[in-house]
Amino acid sequence: MNWILQALNGFSMGALLFLLSSGFTLTFGLARVVSMAHGMYYLLGGYVGLSVIRATGNFWLALLAGGLSITILNYFVDRYLLRRTGENHLAQVLLTVGIVLILSDIALSIWGGDALSLRPPEFFRGPIELPGGIFYPKYRFLLIVFGVLVAVVLLVLYRKTQIGAIVRAGVEDREMVNAMGINVNRLLMLVFALAAFLAGMSGVAGGAFLSLYPGAEWEILVLALVVVIVGGLGSLEGAMVGSVIVGLTDAYARWLLPEFSHFAVFGPMAVLLLFRPQGLLGKEA
Amino acid sequence: MDIRRLALYLGVLALILFAPAFLSAYWLSMLIQVLIFGLLALSVELLLGNLGMFSLCQAAFFAVSAYTVAILQVKYGQPTIVAVPAALGAAVLLSLIFGIAVRTSGVYFILVTIALGHVFWGISWTWVSFTNGEGGIPNVPALAVGPLVFNSHSSYFYVVLAVIALCSLAYRIFIRSPFGLSLWGIRESESRMSGLAYNVVIYKYITFVLAGTLSGIAGILYIYFNMFVSPASAELFLSIEAALMVLVGGTGTIIGPFIGAALMIVIRNWMSAYVKHWMIVMGVVFIATMLWTPKGILGMIRQISLGKRKSPAS
Image (cartoon, rainbow over all chains, first blue to last red; front, side):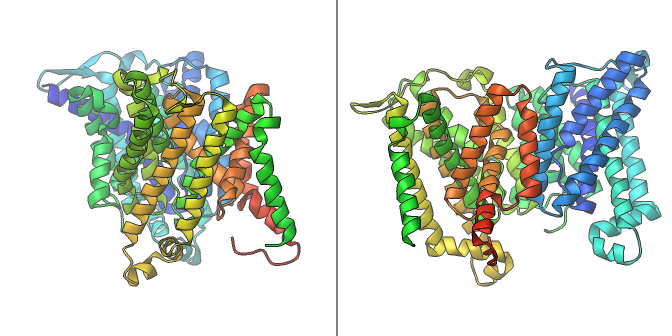
């Protein structure tokens, strides 16, 4: 029984991580940009959502506002700062760290240093009875459903539509796609916007069961990094597999080895580094 | 080397040697910090400048040796003579473990080292019975070897200076050795070097462990200066700062990381004292460095002093 409950915990954490890491992995795959700001986008999106809920009480509006505000922010960050680093990953990392420092200081002075949490709407609260007589928090269950839904939509977009085919081609060879007369810049902007929207939204979704506090940006970022390292950088399917593995490891470790729960998620990463450094679904570098 | 340059070097050397005589306590402690964090930055430079590998877990090695000294001295009452070798051993051991990271390259290496560094930070934070968690370990006694006790900044300064000089010398010898030169080959073309039957991974692994050891030495110097260690010393932010010091100073030299450390530490201390939102200023420094001075201060000076002559390749 407990095993199933913990599995559900793992899947809901995995769903959250997928929302965050899918954008990270796609922006890297297509634009060759590594952004350390993704964790901050999560936290900031959550904070914006929190303020919207306090003002209007509408959770859906909060999700939308969290996502949109980050999309707009990311547009400027990308356009005026990140673009200028070219493909220098080192510069991207330090530049985005600088952005995180600035944003976290601003966030601290607006939302303060206490751990805050979002209140999901009445409908989402309380337990849900699953087949087999298992009671599970409704919100976390719906998060799993939502995560799976987003995953399916993204996968269909990526694998079955023309725009997905262009994105996949761009991941393989950006110059070639450009030479075929496709505006890669516009494509990049689209993928960036999608990634930022998902990151901001994941903050609102996550803020309802993990709390939001200064420093959370790094913790969630590291988890997302482990997801992409395990799954393989640049691969959407890799992000899915990685999220589930990291989510489940985290949940079972919290239950079985509470003292080591902080590092248990790094176990799969270490094993992978030894045997398959490019990640489960990553390509040979 | 021409006379003017020699005179400049000798002048700087004399200034540093007699620094405790004329610097105020505040500036002397700043100078010690610059030297210690400069050494940490030098460990970043060892990997970045020679192999092009950008490690973001150097703070873990820095912190593991600081924690080892603190725990052995404070909790178990061991003397310096036991604590220091143990701390060095801990840094080497941790870098041997984290060395698995060298199996990756490029962005992967950056991401993996971030994650590994986070593991150590997590340990220092959650293993409360051993590390005191968030509170850290205060009241570490001064460095004492036999009858010698270095309990003032002006005497400890010379210990730091001597260690830094030895490390820099060792670094220089290492880089000019056949081993060090092979690293440049690996940086320029990994596939060619492995084609020439060099075991590239072993070279990277050994260099990674040496860099970890260097960070560990910096950590030992730090704990006897600061007398206190907390998870803040293991934070990703410290690793990032060390990397920025290298970039601000300019890669490819030994002095560069120290110049970068001087600038960063002066800015940080000054800002945190006078400006409320100094983190924003630090963020701007990060962004500005990346956008406008990609070759660092040394690169800029070289560019200016060379005038119209072509700038040398890094």
